[in-house]
Image 1 (cartoon, rainbow, N blue to C red):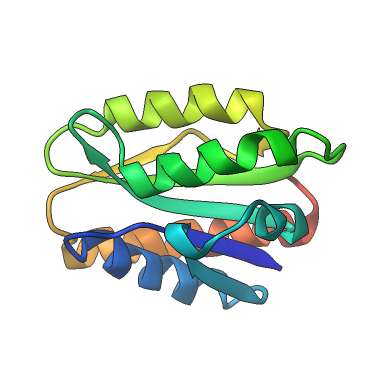
Image 2: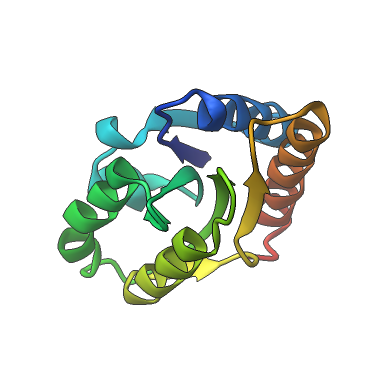
Length: 147
């Protein structure tokens, strides 16, 4: 089972998360949760975690950062590496959120499946198609045991 965790204020990340779910669901079961409703136990139970978050003020959006903050210490006791990846929705840059997530992920028992992907602006049809394909490809990799 893949857990898809997202945070969306403007609706852009919600659109991207829906597209990621559509793609990943072609391969396996996908549970979707908002970051504010996700607990550390949800991360532990997942076969992989796909995150969709925004960049706010050059950093990872608050609710996603709060999830990672509240999950860190309970999660450190887990021995298994959980495959994880992030898709950032950015107004103009996104690199700050990507770098912050990748630094945080090193402290978790996460195994990053790929580099963070950044999509800029309000999601356009080609970006939604990218998000669908991203979700499907990562789910296929998890399903095949690559990650």
